[in-house]
Length: 107
Image (cartoon, rainbow, N blue to C red; front, side, top):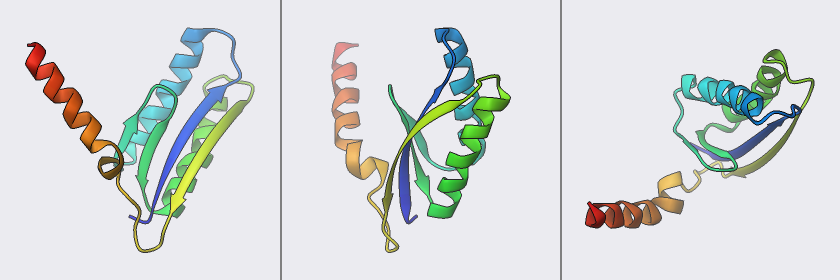
């Protein structure tokens, strides 16, 4: 794995539920890729090979338009290192573990 991206797609539609429906189609496509990904409140982070990730970015734009959006704005962050990048768990794992511990204590 030599790259990770954070992708936010913003379909040019006005209704919240329409936005959610279109974004859900993009996330379903990402899931079908088989790559490790995490959906966040503002963006989805995906790990993999740079070329494969850039193809996902490109196809995500087309998915939004095919789903009915007249256009789409996207924000993409790319981390690329040929020798390998930090994983999602490297970056956020300790926070997820702390959250799970708090939730377990509250049960």
